[in-house]
Image 1 (spheres, rainbow, N blue to C red):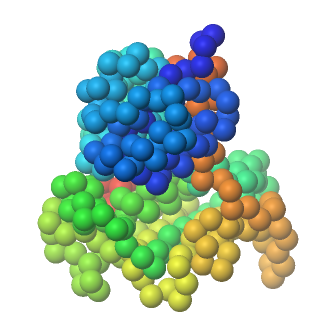
Image 2 (image 1 turned 90 degrees about the vertical axis):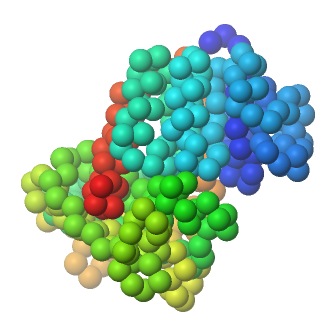
Length: 329
């Protein structure tokens, strides 16, 4: 592309506007149009991109000769909206989850591949310096054979929008909302090994989940066994009395040492990464808290460079498949 890619933004609440700011800061894209049911949200977005047109719907956005669409709408709409854009020849950057099931995610990835369009999902934790340093240790063999990993995301709050609590709209509870990051980080760091077994326990209000089609879980634990015997232990929750706002960690244990990413003092944003040997540990990367927009910025730069379909997008279907198995689907 010789000119800056023209982007549309579908959903410009806090997260949509934050990603817009990150993309604008790259200097390589133009915000052509924004759409949101809320006039207040549209106005706030236009303040960031004064030249953008304000619209009400995806239909209107797709008349704007866009190169890319950034989607931050409710989860139930992600797959359908992504497919419509991709089939119209528009690249897509979508909030997670890309779809509520592996079948939905597969449909989106298939549309991106068929149209040779760049597809990105806001799996933002991959872009922390700490987890990238850990990935390099794992993939470089410096931890020996990684035989176990523990990944946790406990949130002392619950989502503030009613649709999160309707499985038909959200696809699930804390696993769909938070567990997707854990599954993605583990499989990504370990270079996408085959998943051979998944066992899980889902709870709602302290009781076993009776009907996943009618209830959303607020606490979940899962054990995922990989080819070669590596065992992942995953835990996530909403509104857990954890004594702080959040508990977020990704710990990898190998025959030659271990490494961990851990949030600091309950923060959702500040993380430390450490290398561990026996009873000692040392920092792996500097503490950071300004990484939330990096996935969006990376997608924007790749789009501006002319990138089309990325074969790594197929791994999104693998992650969704593990979530399906956690839910017993």
